[in-house]
Image 1 (cartoon, rainbow, N blue to C red):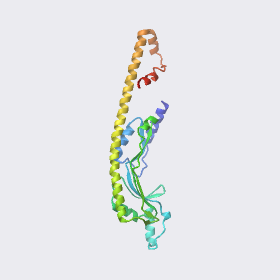
Image 2: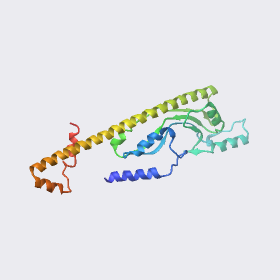
Image 3: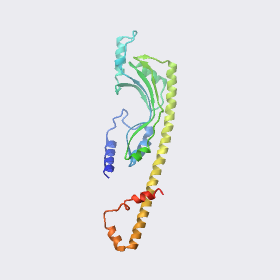
Image 4: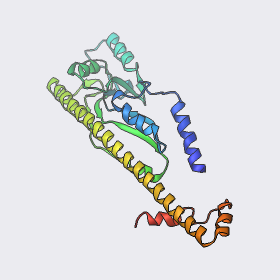
Length: 248
């Protein structure tokens, strides 16, 4: 009971706190999944992302000025590079949908360090009440993409290669949305099955307890009356024996 109450307190605190993510809200494509998990007594989400395409600059400290670049251009690129910082990186571009080639080109124009182009699939960080509950959600994916585009401000790839990367990333985003839908359907089915199993288990326990109490009443009415007034249950009435019956 203490563990149950602690989990409920954690869940309440987490769901009531301010969303400090860059967007400040749950991504639209996974709102159904997040809602189902947070409505359950067994789970709550701590963070999530529906999947994204991002262009990250590793920082301007590694930048070496090109001989053909004037000081004004250098200052402008450094200012853009420092505009959005996260984990010692500058986010030059981010989207949770498909992207265009111009998005990458524009991002590279603002770069001043080591730029990486990434696709990341949807992710859910979920707090689970028990280990058995966590096993239902234990899913991993290698559906990722990470490619370097520049080194110390110098673009390393051609225009055709950038166009190819955009095509690959967009295909992965489409597949990511399909996987979100399949995961949601499987999650609903699994949780529905769990609910039916719990309901069936409770029914079996109640029926078994009723039979034992009825038998005791027939054998000894006085003993049965005294037993019903006793607040301390035996191991059998606590369901230890019934639990074994469920798997026969």
